[in-house]
Amino acid sequence: MATVTFYEKTGCANNTRQKRLLTDAGHTVIAKNLLTETWQADQLRLFFADLPVREWFNYSAPAIKHGEVEPDSLNEQQALALMLENSLLIRRPLMQIGEQRLAGFDFEKVTACLLGLAMNAEQDLESCSRSATEQSCRHE
Image (cartoon, rainbow, N blue to C red):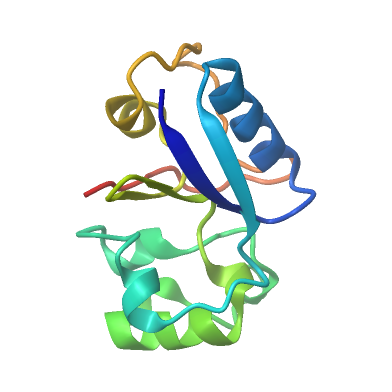
C-alpha cells in the first residue's frame, strides 16, 4: 500500500470521501490544507504535468464562478501567479504518491497510481455536490 500526501480544502465533503476511499483501500493518507500551504510556482506546476492550463483550475472557486478569472484565456505563468495569490483557484485534491503527482480525483488515473483501489467507476468523487465541475486529473 502507498502513502498519499493529500492536499485538500479542509472541511470539503468530497475531499473527506476521497480520503476515506483511500484509507479504506489500505493506503496511508497524510492530509494537508491546500489553502494554507506555502506554494512555489515550480512546486505547484509539477502537479499539473501536461494537462492543459484550463484543467488546472477549481471551477467551483468564486473568482471563476463570478467571471473574475477566465482559465481559457491564461498561459501557464499567469495561471500559476493567480493560484499563488488565491489558492481556492487550485484544482483539488492535489496528491503526491512517491514521485507521482496528481491534480483532481479521476478514478482511472488514481487507480493507475494506486493498484487495489476499489470503488464504483460510476461514482463521481470530484464534482462538488452543490455544483458541476470539470473532471480530469494528471499524474507523472
